[in-house]
Length: 143
Image (cartoon, rainbow, N blue to C red; front, side, top):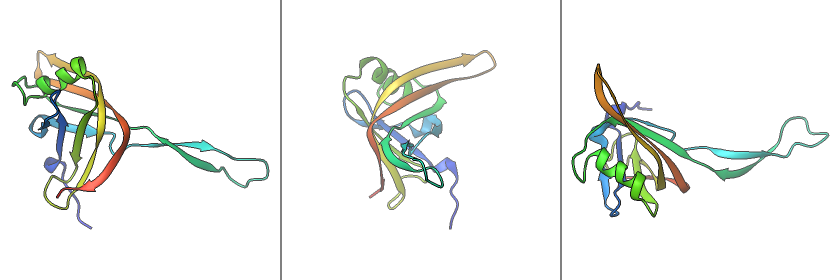
């Protein structure tokens, strides 16, 4: 078993025109992927422990990083536009090990539910964004 360092992770999301934009160079945290599944309890009298049946998968995730407003490629241009002008889901890809052939890739369709820019007199300008997956997250590998 080999361990993986987060510095090699990659994240990409469609812009409003449907072009997949890799914004990894601005992202320093991805949280919440691959997601969670709801369970419905079906325990009854006489059972010796709780019983559950699988329910719906409901995945939300967040990213954060370094603010950049570069047209078409910066996270402010991509995510800000998705937050205000998105009328269809956007595709996303997340590679916790990087994007070389054979590495794990989580992908799916999502909505941007929040996007914020944050600044402080004593620190860099940063951003954070939250997403809601539409459907399920697919686990595959990079080709």
